[in-house]
Length: 476
Image (cartoon, rainbow, N blue to C red):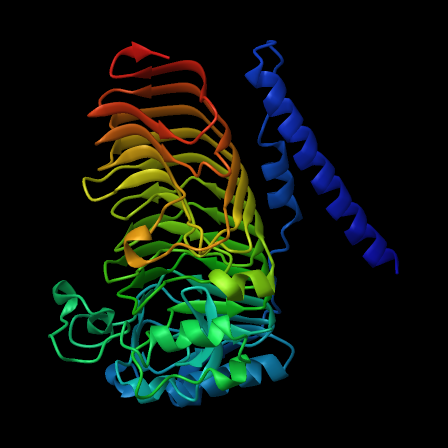
């Protein structure tokens, strides 16, 4: 009873702190010279996140028959080590130096999957090695599909750590071509994810509220698995590892609470290769990571269309700091699968720089997705080069693909400060809100954008609030 009371008190205090933070931000905007720290709530989120710990017991996969030749499949050996570790009350499953080929890995409670320096885990490219099908998600809609390469379902206290490498081995010859794009190996006439038996079928299931158990895909379909997916998990740590060549989204904590992603390097340039996608997730800390991706570096999500509205779990209390964003569609992004909403996002002390990075901060939705984005705080960001904009807010995302509906999104309380941009690309700031519910309360403070083709392009928004902002040498 007392534990629950303590937990409820912490939730109350965090909510109160977030509210007071917003009040402080509003005060600072009115230029009354009040010194405020808009990131006090972020510090509290980090302090309250539970990082899993494990008993000292170690279970070396070599003791379960694993062979480090890069050819022998070690799926069974890794499974046995994890199961014995879990049954013994927890500990570390050790993957030592060497190359180990495997199919899907299922990570159980109280297990730390640890890659020794020099360890390389190669994942099979044969679809049968990612069966049986599991309860998973594809672009914000739940289904039964191929298992993610590393998967957990409703487990508690799990970790993936070490200095080794996970290589999904996805490329134009296997998973990537299912995206249906020639640059990823697709040949006209081959099956692809956009065919009627794939995504349109899943969308129809979602619209009709068909149970997940009846949304069966997998073999004979072309929907790619995520790389790492903790689904409905508590107390998750992913630390230190390098991740290469994902079939689809790389790290996807969905319906999970207390998630730490620390010191991870992601280098994966396939289609939809988002780096880290918290979805319906709470209390997430992403820090000290490097993202070099084929899609958004970090994309915070909360379900697509009817599925998101039915689940109705906003993603909230997410802190991103000390990260380096290279290639990608956006540095830190909210959307586009955002139907249940996103709030309380804090981004600080990051660098974003690449001729192949489209935007630094991005919010994307439409009237089919709907949802809300509120209370986003960004500070101390160094941007080298981006293609399109330092800040891009788009409430018309994907309208070229019939993405219009009846769910007007809400976007408000977006605050950026202490940002320098060397080359902002086409726009310094690009905002396209909806006339039915304009973008509200966007503030820019201590921002210098040295060059951009166009300073500002703002539609259907309250007037931006500037304090010490310079774009192309012009003061705002």
